[in-house]
Image (cartoon, rainbow, N blue to C red; front, top):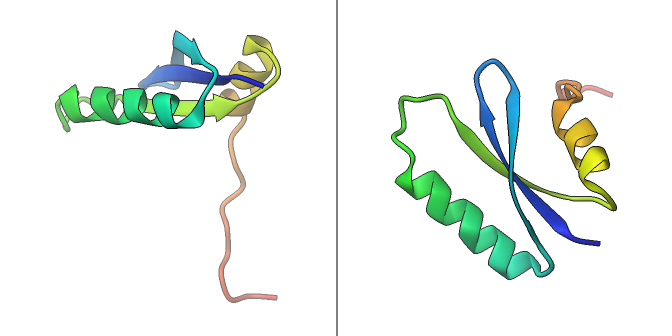
Length: 72
């Protein structure tokens, strides 16, 4: 399965950037883009491991539940 790289701009607007086969290369690309982006823009760069681009977009657009640590 490939790694999909996305730019996420406020308010949660996904922009597809690239598809990479190897994790290390995908990680390096995302780190480079994060480093080049000014910190006050609110833009995020994310990579996601998925079968298809549609699945990757669904995973990124679905809000995560907040984790509560220490309560059982």
